[in-house]
Image (cartoon, rainbow, N blue to C red; front, side, top):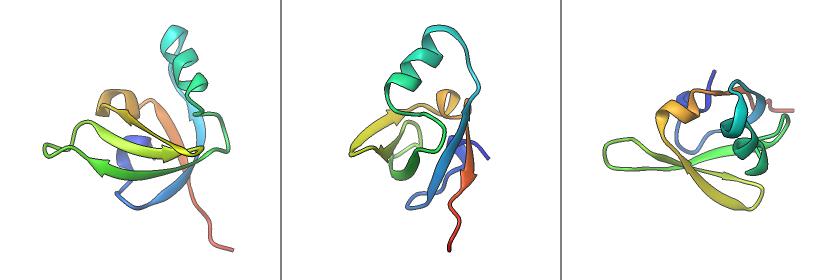
Length: 77
């Protein structure tokens, strides 16, 4: 599953960032590191971009960027 697939109000954890170069560095700098919990919180009227909560802040990504972030579903336990 990718960040683009995460439904509003749903939590997951970052598994991997599948991009390279400055885009990868920027995503990692924003806190998208493996194990980080992320929640989809808001979508623009057309659905793109979407806002996500992580590490005490809200960031927005367009769908093309969000597809580069692989997630693992939040497990209940």
